[in-house]
Length: 520
Image (tube, rainbow, N blue to C red; front, side, top):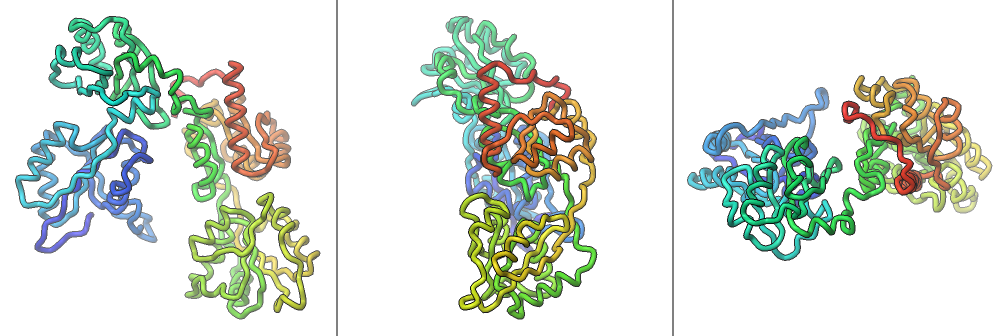
């Protein structure tokens, strides 16, 4: 529950969620949602926005819960306002989360007016209005003037049909027939262009083009809130449709990595319009005996090492957890040089206050790091020992290369990698039946483990492999490798997948769409 103020009312914050995409929230709205403990939300608020409520609050170390209470806003505006006021008068800060912009919905305006008649403090945090954002995401330039109306209530059809500029209408599929007939009856031509957009600004956005004459037939099966754009601006979509025309738009892409490790890959997939779904194939566990790691941490404090080389984010986390056991912090690395195998590993270290002196200038791999790693110099290097904390299954490439450069290596098992538990039954079904449009493998182990815990991806699923060894393993397991970048890095992998998809689309050679029943 939200914190209670003794002898004082809480505040009521009306927060506009915008048109759908959480990335379109205002900075202030994101801050408020992240620290909110009690929220009342409308059903048409995107689930991605709702998921942000309480994200910045500390979680119980045992249960993982953060005490957030999210409830539906039920009843007429007066009833909703009464509920909000009751919670606020009990000392709670209350978030009222609404779709779009709070003061553009009559029902929310009624709630605000009811609250304003009391002594309870309130704020209104505007959201980006869907009436302008959704047509923009659908490639329609509204220009300096348009007319917006909600046809789900009372409508002055004569005034609406006579309005200058394009029309932007809020509707559901059940209102399309009446909307089209009423506008035609009041003077608009049956062949007037129209576009219906559902789930606007999200990666599930879909826009259907029609005319007033075909409006109902075109949109009768669409579910949820719709934004209908009427006018000649619809004809320009083929030139300005930037959102839905991205190479991987609407694709569901399997990322066989944990959420912590998948950050860069998922972000890049999103920029191309894809929907990444992370499926961990490896679970990380502590070493069987902690003695080796404990000696290494004590050696760091005692000045035993000149360098610490981190080859993964898991290695950084393992060392840091051991630091916390001993009551240490980043100051223990004073006088020790840090090397990281790549930017993701460096970023993880930076989150703990550990900043590297050395990153590969070329390929972000063990070989790339070796190319830049300085040889031991007995004049300038007071200590000749390197700490290398890593996984139990790591290769010897890096350790051997460092020895060749004159360094003594403490090769320490910081964590063990084991096969992860199988994903949910729904995910396994998607993998086997073609529910994923593509899968991106970043190592041979991700191939082996995914097949082991969930089965082989369906033949319609495009397979992208980060490098030749990963591709070789995929072929061994009977998979067809469709994409392999020239450079074995996450960025080039996703770019290669996007280019491949764009080429197939241009050639009309994309796999047939999966059945709707298979869609996630």
